[in-house]
Image (cartoon, rainbow, N blue to C red; front, side):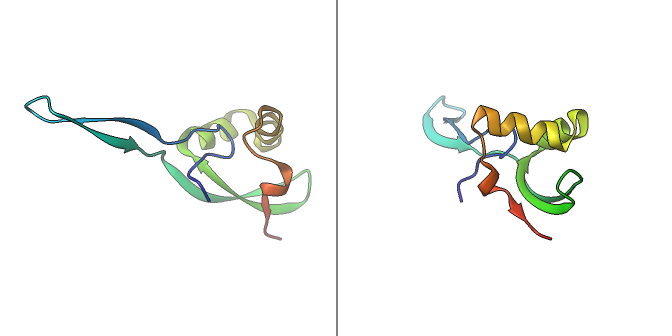
Length: 86
């Protein structure tokens, strides 16, 4: 599974490590991802999502159903990718 947020679509960025002597080497900036369980009221089940901290704030702001439908509409995840727990 790649390190992509299922709600916001955030993924790792590429950049440079810059030393004191301004020497540059490539590095990756990883996303702050974690697995979280949510109770999906519309389907009456628990689901597991791999989301970023920004995705969690978005769910708290607009609600789980609105965040999921907008993520599916934008192509960040698909309904079959969402893991149903119970």
